[in-house]
Image 1 (tube, one colour):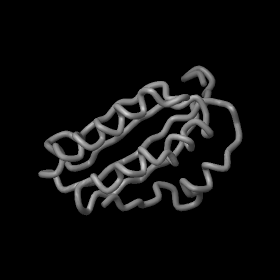
Image 2: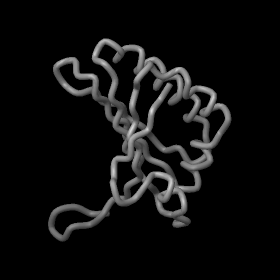
Image 3: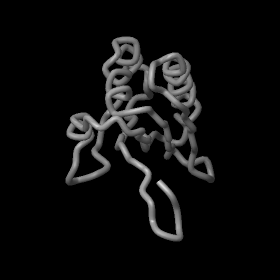
Image 4: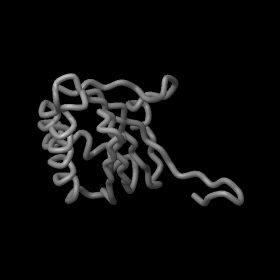
Length: 123
């Protein structure tokens, strides 16, 4: 079963779902499992990603593993809006897959938007 731990101690993931902006968002989700559960986590996440590919508003995703066979993983997913992400997050097909995560797995999801910093990066 998947346990959820907030990434931000001031703004919860649930509070972020109230954002009604139509701008794209990036989901960053850190996962922590025992290193020997890494392959199992990748199978579960791959199954979830395949179901998201046909979901309205899904743009792209990448999955990263910490070096040295770490048990820390990072999911970086781009969505057209918070509403699109929320619809996918609340979809019964997705919810049914949550018990498939390795025992003791911890997820820390948080939504982000690109920002511009003059002479450094564009939004």
